[in-house]
Length: 182
Image (cartoon, rainbow, N blue to C red):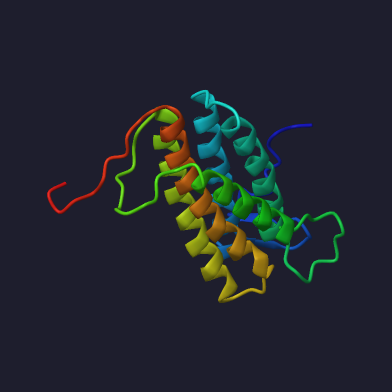
């Protein structure tokens, strides 16, 4: 199978459940940013995070493929091959946030992104995640989507923030607090 199909040479792409849209369509922007987020997590993984962070990131990469499929498939699509984000995936994030938070110092200040290479990349991923959230919300203004898509991505940004803090704590890296003098 060839990697190039030439079907997108005129600025359109196919949706998973059928139909074609322009490549700058809000749906393509949303699932394209999910793909970018997944790549950012791949960079974090390449920095060699310890367990359980390594396994958690791999789990979330799978979730992101579900989310990308979900966003690439209109709700009224006739396909039965699309995967959709489910409440169980949102709950998984919430459980992980609660587990990590129980082991972290309470957050009393804003913190500056950084720390270990893994934590710094997780902060970058968090900002990509927030952009994806804005794009999903924009898509929802014109198209019906799975309501859990925005819930999942909102919770994921919280998870990424907490995971960056957790990674720094595991590595003994202190957090840099933001102050007016920072």
